[in-house]
Image 1 (cartoon, one colour):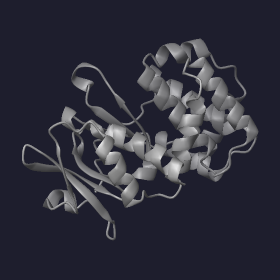
Image 2: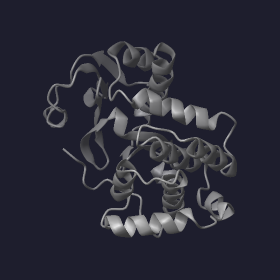
Image 3: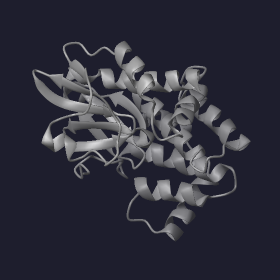
Length: 256
């Protein structure tokens, strides 16, 4: 089940246009536009034909980007990290990281004024996601480190009918999360199922690009996926999911 109302990256919005431009630059930089890279561009920019995408990527890739404008559009640390994570996803989309792509990722990180080690961190995340699932022990270890507050975590599969309906057949349950005596999230080796503001949905770990927080009403946890969509978790007691995802990356890298 897909939360079809999930907001997407949108052309014409400066911070999203900045991400589109960076993605095109990364896709073009090694001189070969792989099918996997085109698939990702089509996912984040639906409605554009392959020939139109090829032409646009070629134009952006041979133009001089205004990195000052991009840095200004990506005006928070979270937005800059998410941009770099999207770029790392594009660079490794074909399961090969060309030296020119690596050099470009380092340049993007510098231009976005991200800390030293930023590229290593996002590439570590990508390596951890390649298997498409996380071992139960890795998940449980990361769970114990998260700031879950009053949320209650119980081993086993979720029981709520609407959540169960979203879980792909054969998924391996790890734990369920409840707040105020209500089950709100289920964690599986393959992904997470939850009631997001956009609707109940199952997100595979390998489709998650990263997490961020907004401000004000948008201060909920945002989960960004590689189709350009964003899901929101409004309850602050579930913000441990961000630490869980980041913790899994670190644990998988250490144990792998």
